[in-house]
Amino acid sequence: MAHAAPAPGGRASGTVTARPSMLPDVFSARTHMIASVAVPLVLGLIYGYWAAANRRSGGEITGWNLLFGFLTALAFIVAYVGVRALGPHMRRELHAVVWAAFVGGSFGFLYSQTDASVLRSSLMGLAVGAAWFVVMFYRYYTHEDAQGHRLG
Image (cartoon, rainbow, N blue to C red):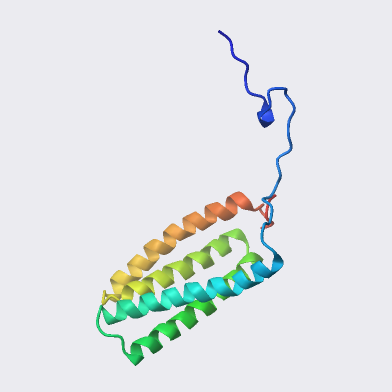
């Protein structure tokens, strides 16, 4: 028994429907503005808390530990905002390297707060950074043309 092959666009009649090139933006400009401030702040606070918790190794929370957590959060926020601001102006290779350095360095610093050796922390940061480079390079390679312009 023969079956008809599916037509492009999913219609049996053979008409092709145009696919939208980009996803619709369902959020307002105000929501994007709030998210551009809230996301770095929340990520920074989570990172600072995580670093402070690693540093105290389950011990009691002290004033110095709180100060360390907030300063770590501030440094993370500044670095994250810098990467987000400068990244789109770079070619895809350098953009992926910058993200890999940020993620690898951030992970290596968190790992170093667990009283691991400097060598082990560095190697773990390099491994995570290298994996992140592969992911980001693939993403930018498949979503940008050779000049760095976004496709679609």
